[in-house]
Image (spheres, rainbow, N blue to C red):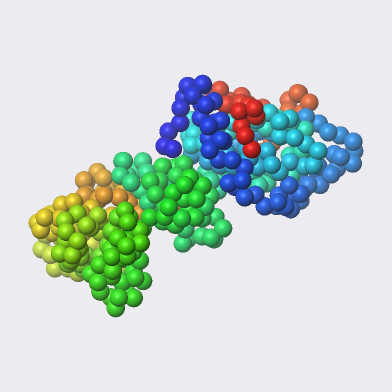
Length: 400
């Protein structure tokens, strides 16, 4: 979803088609959301106060972010508004104008505060939903924005979203979806791909090799036999840094796979060398030793693996790299033409970074009431703003 249409008619079509692709039930909202249980208490009390005072104003709530990035969570936010209104209120009464899933926001600068959504309707129906709605947009946009940064750096090479292990299991599915909005080609768990119909991909963990007493070749062969019998069509990729000699291990695995299964049986090798280690194949190498930083997965190591594989006729075996890859490191690899097939990136996409390399550590949204009964109304500095990119939701074109 890297790039959204600019033509108004196409944007309208994209919004409604997207909502049809993501029906209400896919999000599995907590039934307590409609009661305000997941909301800041002051919103619940606001709605109660208005009801107690006999007031039921029609308002416009304006949602914006304070930073540049990629918007995600629009479909979920709309479905939340559709299904979690207070009793006695109907979604059809709401007027929703919104940007699209995957739109770039605040592209003109960090202080643009570009509106991403207007919700107009009787406030008592959705006052309690501000908290979860903003939370949805914040988390999804954080992951989507960081993923887009990495995807752009990779210049067309696939990025594998390998972040599920780095956060609470409850957010695997929405995080994986947000990564897809940002342009990730695949995810590492089935849960992360559930909303968009993808299965988790992956090579093999170090644990599999350990279970075969540290023998990467035997682990890979067993993995290939299993896939052929139980999951035909899944490609075989071996993890080759267990013994910290990725060149020799890559060759040993490729030879064994060819001997048992023939040419083309091994799709690729993945290198995940710790940033605290120097691969044994580089130690003492006169071409690089003492002349460059050689820890972790580096360009010299990848090129050495590539040359070794090519020399023995394994040119079709790709090299996937993972472990500490930031946008800056990926850009450097691409600029230098390092022969990688794909990049695996994990925790930094969730905001688990220092905020450098162009990655974000947070992505907050704010909502304000900016119109009441059709008249401008709002705190100083927060006024109603049109957005020419908005698409108006037509409830008649959206099923449940």
